[in-house]
Amino acid sequence: MNRSTVIDAHNVSKVYNPDTIPVYAVNNVHLHLERGEFTALVGPSGSGKTTLLNLIGGLDRPDSGEIIINGVDITKLSDNQLIDFRLHNIGFVFQSFNLIPVLTAKENVEMIMHLQRLSKGDRDTRVGQLFDEIQLSDKLNSRPSELSGGQQQRVAVARALASKPQFVLADEPTANLDTKSAFNLLDIMLKLNQEENITFLFSTHDQRVIERARRVITLVDGKIASDTAPVNVATTT
Amino acid sequence: MIVLMSWRNIWRNKARSVVIMISIMLGLFAGISILSLYKGMIHSKVRTVIDRESGHIQIHHPKFKDDYLPEFTITDSQAVAKTLQIPNVYAATQRVVTSGMITTTTGSAGVNIYGIDPESEKAISKLDEKIIEGNYFNTSTRNPIVIGKKLATKMKLKLKSKIVLTFMDSTNTMVAAAYRVVAIYESENAPFDERTVYTTKSNLNNLLNIGDKFHEIAVILNHDEDLDAVTAELKSKFPDLLVETWKQVSPETELMVSTTDQYSYIILIIIMLALAFGIINTMLMAILERTREIGMLVALGMNKLKLFTLILSETLFLTFAGTPLAILLSYVLITYFNNNGLDLSGFGEDMMKEFGFQNLIYPEFPWDKISGLTAIVSVTAILSGLLPAMKALRLKPTEALRK
Image (tube, rainbow over all chains, first blue to last red; front, side, top):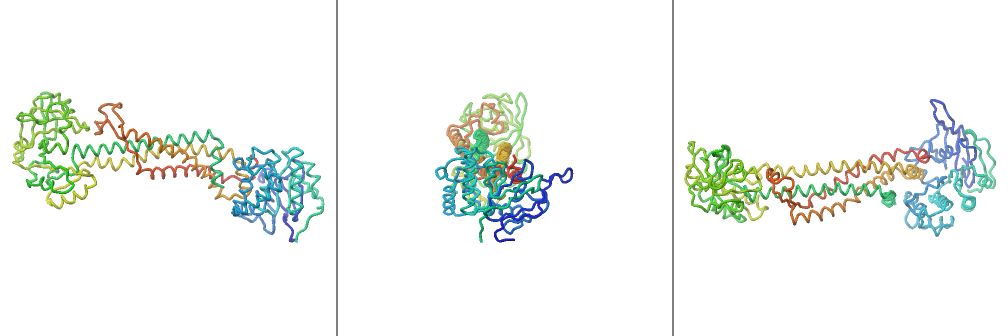
């Protein structure tokens, strides 16, 4: 495996109802992502985008195949090891933001670092950096209910990056946002991708997002139907 | 952070949390009140037994209590004087005791007959203070007798009524003597009043044919705490006699003291068990409402221990939030009734007396049981939190996130 490889998935399949009427949500997929990629996973509803993201994110287990993240085959990890692996290696951004309503924006981001047992000083420094990057330094102490949808999703991105993950998985991150908020979020994600070499893999139906992705993988019926070549992928040594 | 989240989570649905907190508060308040009431009742009962019936300590011939035969007397005429020499002994009296039959024109009944020294008895059983009709042996009546109100009512006796007492003397000869009721007493123990009559020691001595001897020494101490020390000293002073504390003289009272705590805790556990279902229901609802959020936390990397801690902390907060208020509320109320008394005669004037309790109870705040109470509440909270926590732990992140 190349040193810059972040995700290497081979022959990954996920079958629902294997004993009755088998439905291949993901069917023998091979996927290779290098550090710094900004990749969109597209396809019609039911094509297996979310299932594939869940498998790569270690939220679900494949029925066959192997998924190697940063050199670790996550299909062989126990549940507890997988939780710990996710905490330190993968950032998640969900379609409906999923911020914790009883915590402030700062606390939502800080929580991940709490789980990682970072010191208060490290947490404060990282929170400051992240809120500068998402341009919400004035909303640190706001509750999610006091933020707009776009602002909440930016906080969710900050939370995904709080643990300094290997890559960020985003499931339809702009689906619930208006055009302005969606572009604003995309700008931030691209900036993080270009300036900090953060790898993004996101599922989307949104043409605005697809146009700005530098690699587009199309899934149809659980299989990769097309995979455009990556453009200007940043390299790391 | 976990504790902060737990605390804030319980206020997400204020109405639901407040309802469960109030129910826990009321349950605990009821439990503490029952503990206090029982403590007050038992204290009152013990005081009645010590101060109005048996005294702290009694001394008998070792065989006397086997069959209450008159010949088993205390022969040391100086025994009372020797007892009074012991430090911390407040008062002591000698009694002649036998059992017999009281007969009137309306019927007959078995009674315990006490021959007492009227003066020294005042300091022991305070019989003079319990007289409700007549005079306490201040009479020239030849064979005076003081009977209890319950017996008087049952046998339709009044002051100056004539009765006949029949009993065996020390030579096993049946003796019968006519007595005149000179006073009627009423204590806090109706069954005691029904079966106990008093005459003078000299009178009963003559009829029992035991000279100047007696059967019982009753002792009152300055302080309850001196009981064991004085008992030990009396045992060494009278090695041939049977020295017993009130706990041995009145084992039913001692049993009541030792078992009341257990009954109180059982009642409290039943109350908390009922409340536990409310807590479980509330927490299950909270888990159900936050399924997606819990799935998200697990997805982001919250491990099972931290998730368990989160749910359990919420249960603990929910359970303990009402506890200080319950303790404070019950303390205020119990202190009031401790000062003013709680009159239970409304439940039936004679009901309490039938069980040997006073109508006016002074509840005592059970400080000694607060740790036990806290333990019961803690166990309730932990047990109530287990099921919701297990339910949360079983959630699969992918399924939970779809909710």
